[in-house]
Length: 332
Ligand SMILES: [Zn+2]
Image (cartoon, rainbow, N blue to C red; front, side, top):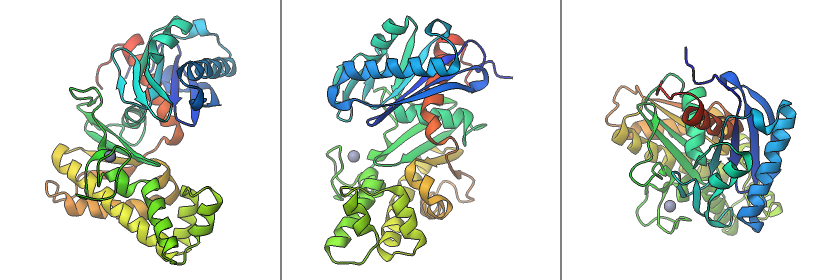
């Protein structure tokens, strides 16, 4: 039996560019109360911290307990971070630089706070409580507007010498390919994210290729919604199918390369794109990954969908807080 779910409740906080999710997590990782806020990203660090605190208080009320009943808190945040100091070094989504969110929240709550990259936190939750449960070597990829990742080795998040390892979205899968948000060319994120698919669809629209996505994206300020993409795929829209195949192919190449380099037991694919497109998309990714995985000729490495959905962030943040401050982490 694991002792890691025992003890007083902890807070799990998922800080995103558009929304903040807070939850009070009790014994055995049950969610006792939760709340949600819009992220005041335009107003910067102090406003974000205040929104987090207000979100925490609402989640505590929902759980019918007070701040004094909490043992610790965990925050999953966009990065890069200085995780030792609990500082967000830089985030364009949050409009902050060198913001000490961990110490700031710790002072308000009078409790210890751990800060870790949002995607690493989500991957850790999948490893401990979701699709990766029971495995020790895990690669997780989350495909949405960007592509984030998490590598688990021997039951621990691989953070590397920089503390920020795991950025699998910035593996280059096409030399000289499209420009990525990070400045490089041909990153996985620039070829396989929802943003990348949307960019290609818009190009097709400009070339006059018929697609149901043209009007839908125009109505949403040029943004591609996963649900609209899924509907277009079901309707056998030629442009949607072509771009989806292309994106899945590149994601598979990236994951196959990781399978060769790292040798995980399982690769978990999560995020909005697989959430909307499901098994057919995962099958395409799997085929491309396996075609690449020379170190796994018998196809023993599993490639599966994430299981926790939007709760991965709050659960993972709470787990890290509990393991760091409440129970002894046994690595099991
Ligand atoms: Zn990049």
